[in-house]
Each structure stands twice: as C-alpha cells, then as structure tokens.
Image (spheres, rainbow, N blue to C red):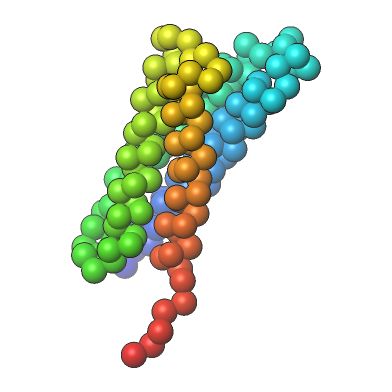
Length: 143
C-alpha cells in the first residue's frame, strides 16, 4: 500500500516536471513569435510548430497528471478551496486546449476573440496552478 502511494507520488512529480518544461517551451515560443515578429521572422513558422507540439504534448501529460492527482486527492471532501481552484484550473485548461487545437486548423489572428481567450486562459492557468499548489502547502494552525 505504501509502495503504491510512493509510486503514484513519484509519477506525479515526474508528470509535473515534464509539464513545467512543456509549458515553459510553449510560453517562450509564443512570447518570441508575438513580441519579436520581425526579428524572428526567419524562424517564425518553426517556432509556431514547436509551440503547437509542446502544447499538444502538454495536453496529454496534463491528462495523465490529472488522473494520477485525482486518484490521490479525490477523498479530500473538506478541502473546498483546493477543490474549487482545481476545478477552475481544469476548466481554464480545457478552454486553452480547445482554442489551441482550433488554432491548428484555423488561424488564430492576433487580437481575435479566440486568440485573446487562448492567451488570457494560458496566463490564468499559471496563476491558478501556483495558487492551488501553494494553498495545499500553506502552514496550518494546530488545534
């Protein structure tokens, strides 16, 4: 029993490290293509491909992490803040993933509603995940 729990926690950490790397790559390529369109014009297509690929792989890894995470935390019924921030992050992630997948087939032009939705939810996820994780490790009063 304890060994299975340790394996799940180790796997969760691995998923998170991979996910952090993928999100970092996606964020850097998106920032580069948006902030420096003239400077990086020669490699813009490649950067978009790397952004799309890292985002797609991040969707798969996040699903694996979510399954693992819920198996460990589903019984925590009293942790209301954690539950609702987790649900909010999953909803934001779904919006980001769907708008990103949409961008594979139809162009997400700068400033369009879907582009803005993809951008805003991407940033909100990072803030939400940080809050969600920090809330779980906050110091608690001993009673």
